[in-house]
Length: 544
Image (cartoon, rainbow, N blue to C red):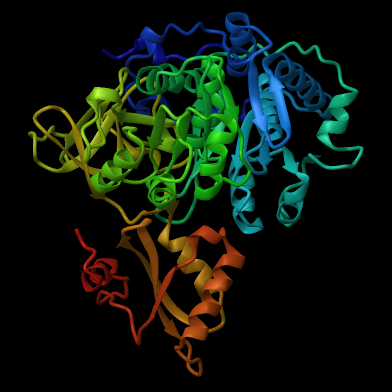
């Protein structure tokens, strides 16, 4: 049933009203379901729930955050978060201000995230791989006023010319560093009196046009993903040890290594470098029990798994791209562990279709997570019968709310979140992934917008025209492939291809670079000059 209270906002605890005023109008929201069953009060601060309430339930001496040569108990975490919160207040942060975070996964980044939420700020976490041009887009859209930046990642951030707010480094040796300022800050902080439906998180996702979209999430949303997917599918205990490869800037990673373990009173190992070999070394070292990564990583670990001690693992979660049944079976044969597959979206914060234990059927994504409903529909939003592919439509206690973006009405139609994925549902209610319905390239769990890669290539003096598509790949799901028309006088040779790849890596986040480049004399276009991407897909055999 629809939750009528979800279409009504509580009095805000924000002093800065930017976020609430940027919410889409109610008529453009998806219908929310299952929220009432979660029983959240009107006044709610997610950071308080994840730390203070967890201490009340499980005690302060249990391990919470683990890093390289670093460990925080829940009591130590509480003290650090309150000290960091007081530093933010002293710096001028008021409830509703946007605070950007930049750094790799480590305990300090998690403490900063919790501190921002505790003071009522709106946290904007960015991936450390992003370049200044990408950071500037995010900063401008979110109207960021403060930034907490790992001291090793300041250079690109300082290249964001439009930012004129306050930057506080962390993890470094200077007196203005967040850590140094925490040493002299009070360990007693009164958390902001935020509403459950105050925005606490702006999570950015790539659009197919290359223009990033900010998804807006409430304090209650942060808890809802733990109380649905994590509670019912991962089923954590306070003795679990979480770890994973996705960055905290990805909502998949935020849930996996921050929200889910803290909600359960468990501990989390935050690894700055989480390559497949590093994960295999970390599992026995920290006795990791719950592992989150992409299918690409599970495939890469398989050749090494037979010689690794994986005896501590009890849960392995895969998301970010489709999980082939062959990978599922190979991992099960090597480890005896049934991979938990799932599909989520930044717009809905985390995973909404999945299965665990005896409910898993290899080759399917699963069934709607308790609290969510899903259907396969046609373009008119009419439900399709079992076995017929169509658009995936989802409703739940969370949903898409873009910050001041006209694309809200594309993603939300008829009260449904339309994810852009093509699925079919079988007679037993299991969902089978078919393809993307748009031009988004999903490679190794990363969403890559073709126009953004094209823009980077066109900035090179040798490129006259270019078109970018995704092509299937066994290891990565999809690869970025660029078709390039060169300017006169430039040679179409391997050296030029490598030069263009290096140029893209230096211009935008390196994971977006085209791993294949094909030089062509011309690109297929309509009579009016519009690029026909579908013809390139037909040429490469990648059309649906």
